[in-house]
Image 1 (cartoon, rainbow, N blue to C red):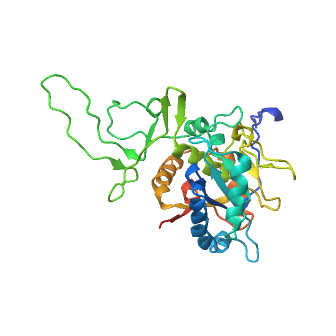
Image 2: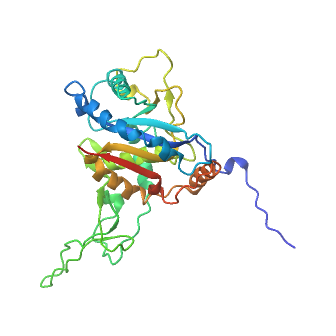
Length: 322
């Protein structure tokens, strides 16, 4: 009996780095420049509305866990230092923490939005774009440029473009856009992922938020390695005076459970719902490497959890109006 044997050096086998997981990552909001006007009145209003909803978080985190197991919950917030720079880390971060504490909220981690465009020498936004698996629309003519050129991603088949045809011919008949999956009634979404401007490429908010969600779920890797690791600020070390000098992800609470989690819940103002719809459109077409997906699923299963196969089903939201 013959047997085919393949020898491979251990160093040639790709290694997928693992991460520690909490059961639930809770985002307590995006922080923008306007939150700091008028004596941080808007920031207080934001945390006041969020505080009531956080009371239900422990029960949500415990769903599916083995009986008697205490859920691990980490909290985080995101500061916009990509589209609008404001203040300094030494001014903004302590103010956010103290305001949250007024409403009984503990902030474990803070992240900079610009770090999800590029972290050191890795362009994270490009990494996610390259992981997109776009379904070719049916009955298309190729008149619209591909994603790599246009920077637009949809969740289905677009209306046909008004291409110029030969003289004396009728224009093509209009047909409506169609959402993938053949739902009874389509809700079509077309998402701009970036714009090319005089100062260079500007990544869209929805794409950066997608990178943020993948990071929170512990599913983002570059050549098998994790990229954004929480930096624990040593006791007594002052925060830097410039955002670019601040690590992309800071651990504020020494007792915090791991930053990454099997599932995430995001509490935010209702006006960000369209952005998060776009985020879900993006993430529904991201191909997570099989080794990374398997690693997260196996770890969760060991704790009695069965993770949804669809990535977007691991994300939950509370949109707060008023």
